[in-house]
Length: 270
Image (cartoon, rainbow, N blue to C red; front, side):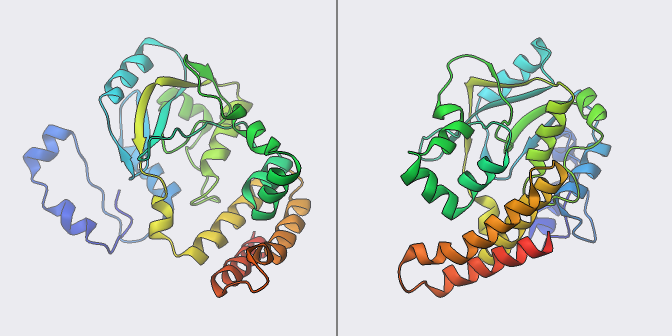
């Protein structure tokens, strides 16, 4: 599904001949508007017919392990399945636990991370990421890395939709896994299956200020939806936005000040 992009994608897709489309079982759906990730995903799912659905970011590099991942999915009954993602530098990305108020603040705000690092020896980071442990066998997790995962169609039918439209860019995956957990669905990480992830794609296509605005807005919306003390979180975000630029030195840069301003704006618009 092309969301009315202006980067040459429609022209590139138009060059794919019909024979290649048939051989790849590829269907191209152009839209005349940008409905956001959630809306476009719903359209794509509605046009699909397989037993399994793959959610895949555009910065994923497929490896031979994807075929093994499909075989594992067919041989087991887990409704959500994720591989071990490896960055281009060769470092692993760690799965997470479900978010709480303390995990949101101490892991996702600049001030919170500083406090966690210097006062608690990164306790909250280790708590969120299973102690930064690298597993050597399949293990149930609360929050797979959403850049690449399989979900069974029957599970998606129970959940109603993949990503919520009120969380158009960020925290849609977190909301999905929270809904799956609420229904008792098992989410498994298979660490022997490895897929390469070139991280940071969303930041390359979003202006930094837009990124800060949408991230904070989505975080607080998620907190409201799941009753994670959203007013307290909003107050903490305000404190973070005011104090965080000062952690860069006595004379904060214009970029730091603008980022803080857009985090404040995101909190107000949530």
